[in-house]
Image 1: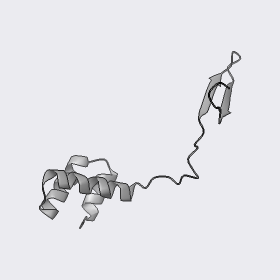
Image 2 (image 1 turned 120 degrees about the vertical axis):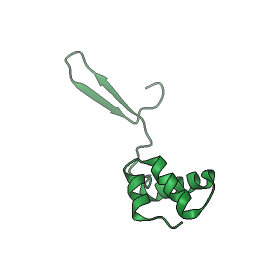
Image 3 (image 1 turned 30 degrees about the horizontal axis):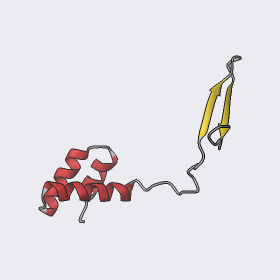
Length: 79
């Protein structure tokens, strides 16, 4: 895809409609293809965090009566 800095800027700044419109005009493609290209470029500009950075274990937050916050990480059901 021949995206330009304007399309990238629109994507990064959340102007989805303008980005899709610019992609359609630049590529001369139907709307659905432009939307698909938008999603592809969005994924390139906003990569998913590494799986090592993601916590696969749930975190539970609980406020105690004294106002303190307790964080439980990696609890399984029934714990």
